[in-house]
Length: 261
Image (cartoon, rainbow, N blue to C red):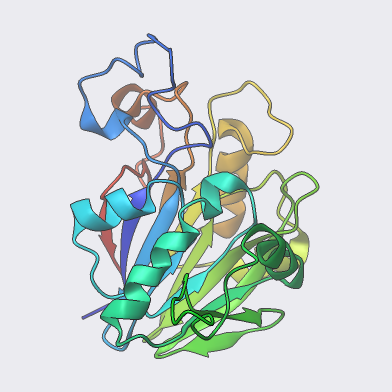
């Protein structure tokens, strides 16, 4: 089995359809226009892990039959990426009540302890656990089973944010779901990836913390991946129409999409 990516969600912070919106995308019959908040499931022969735990994490796991999660990576602490974190406890149980490792930036870990003060590595005094997580500060490359993981610091407003580079069996996947700017050192690590997944919130209307199409395409040109994919789209993006305008080597992701590398 090669490196496999499954998109648990591909939408921006409010999801698509948006509450109370009747625009063409929010009322579309195309299932690709229905977007949970963004999250990723990564599988190899020796490892299975998730990147982020968005609000619909449980629903995505049920729908996509995600049964094996042995670790978690976090990109940052915005609620659209961590609101489903408590549901990781189900994988503690499925894994024999073992502790799950979670990797993130030091700033993200500090914030997670404030947001989820009840999370630890042992059951509480009543014998209950919610969930059992061991946090690891990801400041340099590390291994998760047969996957080498390199943190990719990016600029996403004032919130410390990572993307990640996954390397397995000679293949390289760069994943950056949220960013406005990619520093030169990070960009150098992404160049020539087999697959690059990059933030693309909407068309040309600028946003202060996310990439829009022109800047996302410019970064894809610099990265020059064999295949490129956009993620974290808002309701301004109607899948079929937007994708038809993209270069052939770049596609839009959609919820449940699977990529084999």
